[in-house]
Each structure stands twice: as structure tokens, then as C-alpha cells.
Length: 255
Image (cartoon, rainbow, N blue to C red; front, side):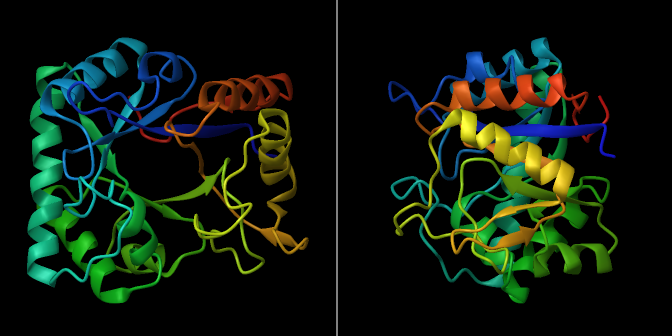
């Protein structure tokens, strides 16, 4: 019986006067924060403020690395060369490590964002580039990725600790892949239904796919997208239901 699970959210995605999500509110509910590194979102001042708030709440910090795609919010596929991608990932982790130190905390894991996340789930070349970048800067940093993906298998083979992730507010296909955001029904919005779905994930080891089939998913962490409408209520209902059932919300990365 699972007694604890991590609850994470993508934060620090505001940029200057442009606001994305409610970081202050969601930091009170999650155990880990995937903080943007400036490539898909997040200005330095926003990132530093988010890191300080996370440190005050005792929330674990992860580097939310991305393709260099501010305009597309990191959700557009890019055919980046190996050496360039390695340098991009090292640069982003290093930048967040510096800001985290100034905020009195530290980066404890790496989670790719958006299109990069989905690409390394199945593309060996880009997955190995991200893995080698992490190994180059700190081999102790776990890689968070899609549960059951090829990318996590490759990371384990290279000696990295991996964290399998499930998405609370996203629909799955029967093969365990995420339904594309371009398709109807890909993003879920009913907070109560989402909470029950995550309880099913933990207790039964999977969820019902968009095709109506039970899909096994073994996850160490659950993500609620901070930019989703109703994200705060989703996170609140998930946490309340899990704790009601005796399942603690706890960061996988030791504080």
C-alpha cells in the first residue's frame, strides 16, 4: 500500500508584467515545484521571488528546463543538435542553482518542460543529451519524466535516479502516452473527478484512458499544471482526498 506520494506543479512562469498562475497559493499545497529557468518562461526577478517563496514553504525545487522558446511557451518541437541541447540544459540548471542559492534553497531534481519533456520520452538522441547534461553538472540530480517512457529507461541505464510522473489534469491514451493538447478532451477540468482519478492511480496502479480502457501507470509523483484553469482547486482536492485516505503528500527529494 502506497503511504506517500509527491505532488508537484510548474511554477515561476510569469514574465515581467505578464502573470501566469498563482504560485503563492499553489506552493501551500504541493511538495515539489518545477521552477522555470528562463527558456520557456520566467524572468530572473520572478524566478528569484518564486524560489524564496518555495524555500519559506519548505517545498523542494526542480529545474524545469526547456527548449529556447519563449514565444511558444516551450510547447513547440525543436530539432536541436546534441551539443547545443546539452549546453542549453547545463545553462538552465546552472542559472537556477545560482538563484536558488541566493534564495536559501537548492535545486534537487530536473524535469524537462513541454515539448522537450514529450520528445525525450521516446527520442533517444535528445533523451541522452538531456541525461548527459545532468550528469555533467550533478549526477545526484534525479530526472523526472513520463511514467513508463523510454527516456527514463535510458537515464537509469546511465546511472541517474529517475522519478516516474503522472499528470492529474491530462488525459491518457491506452498505451500510456498523453493525449495531445490539440485533441478534444486532452485537458481535464473537474477538480473532484481529477482527485478521484489520482486516488485510483495510487490504489489501483493506473487510470482509465480516453479510449475507456484501464491503463497501468506506476508513478512516484503527480503533476498539476500551474497554468491550468482551476489548478489551485485541483491541487487542494487531490491533497485533501489523499490525506483523508491516509496517503501523505511528501517530496521525493529529501529536504
